[in-house]
Length: 68
Image 1: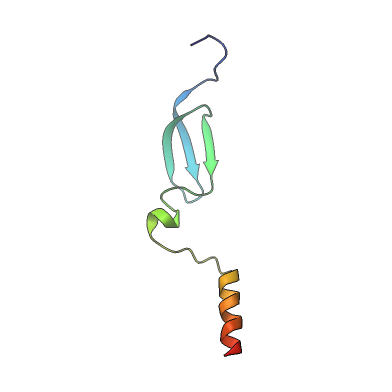
Image 2 (image 1 turned 45 degrees about the vertical axis):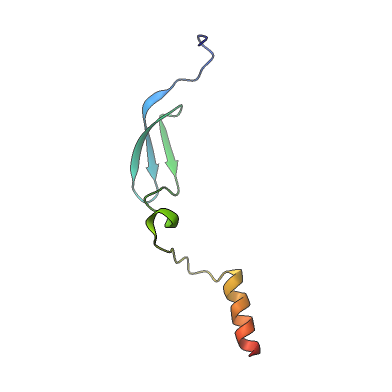
């Protein structure tokens, strides 16, 4: 590798998630904050998130139920 052209690499960079999980990985940034990670993402946890908002599919189903 050439000298002085690569960014500084941190072997144990801290990654903090909004759910409270903390990971250590190698990165060019020493600290990072993310909104979602493998400990809180519904795909990995198997739990469905209830955001409280009605989506397009639910609105469509409600309209079709009214027609019947």
